[in-house]
Image 1 (tube, rainbow, N blue to C red):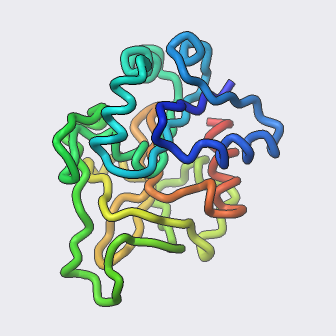
Image 2: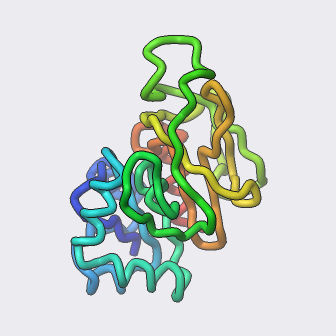
Amino acid sequence: MIAIVDYGAGNIKAILNIYKLLNINVSIIKNSRQLEEANKIILAGVGAFDDSMSRLNNSGMREILDRQVLEKHVPVLGICVGMQMMACGSEEGKESGLCWFENSRVIKIDELNLQHKPKLPHMGWNKVQPLKNHSIFNNINKNKGFYFLHSYHFFCHQKYHLGITNYGSEFASAVCKDNIYGLQFHPEKSHSNGINVLKNFSEC
């Protein structure tokens, strides 16, 4: 069962609906007991880093989430702010992140490299260039791209980069460390490409 973590800060119903259309077993979960039963986990997020981390820390699921991911190696997919929460911290706030990627942080997109206006947020469709032959990108139309909406991006060691995107400068738009996956774009808003990515994660 894929568990979509409901800690009060994610666009989760759209993700739920996609998996239901694909006839994949999925549930929205709100407590640690349900989370322990998951064989895959999705951590979505929208809004500010500090607010999302505070909501997760206060949900009662933080401890079991760490245990499932770090000790039991349950595959987890972070989406947008859900990906950013996997870093150790963010320029956007003061809260500590999950720190699942060592020496990682979330930094603001450099507006000096952007020529068009409005410069931020980075909003709309953009391409993702896969860096590795990974199953998460199976059946993806590279020319179509994915839908983005963010002003900050994930920074970690290049060895964890699965895909990069250019918006003034290049940033990691998809990362992977063992059983931990992160996507800066919104697959639930990315039509067939997003549906395929979510399907691919269910098969990882």
